[in-house]
Image 1 (cartoon, rainbow, N blue to C red):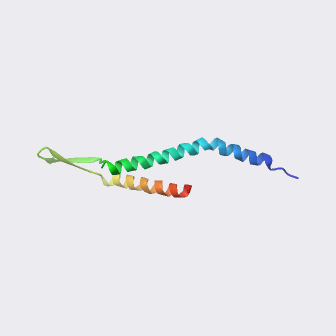
Image 2: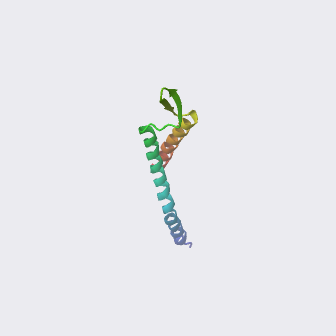
Image 3: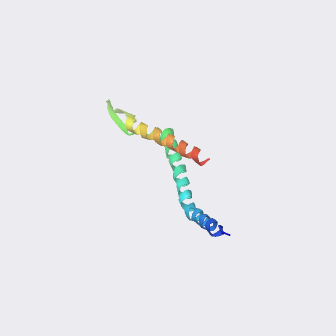
Length: 83
């Protein structure tokens, strides 16, 4: 008769060992969500040009906009995987 008790205990130990990594990952996910919300809410831009008369216009480059959108999608995808 085989006893799987040791294997189950080892699996449990591995889960406990990896728990801090999971907690850190979840923290990273929440921080990323907060960063994206801040960028959207505060109208963060990465480009500006002189419009003359002392004024200037700010805008997001296509690359920056794509990074934000890809990050937003990745956060949603990961969040759905964790449910």
